[in-house]
Image (cartoon, rainbow, N blue to C red):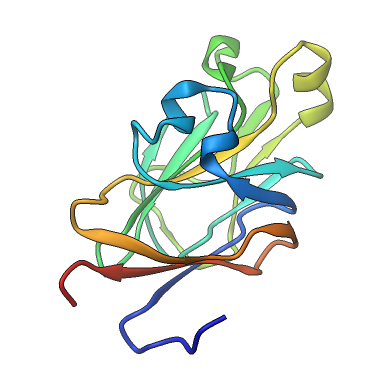
Length: 159
């Protein structure tokens, strides 16, 4: 791990589990980085926490995805499972709403990953930097992680 510079924006694990390269996700939209770069998590529990401080900028009406925008302008999208939009919110409970301010570590969503698995859904959680035209990921720290472990270092391009 390199020494963190003052320009680094740190992103922390939003869920406990195994963090891995996004290109290994089964959904090609995420694996090919169509929404942006990031990483994926195979979760070990059904809670999702804010990986950065900021404001809830998106909360899907089906509760399967949420985006946070940091004060610096970093936009992080977290998508629980693959094709879980089809459930219409079943097995998901939101603890936040659009426009709400959150601190890193605040509870965002609860989801029943056992029920999702039983219904045949891939429970992989992609975490995506959705504004890579402004920011870039400079470090990734994969492996078995706990909520709150640093997972990404992000910097503004040209900084």
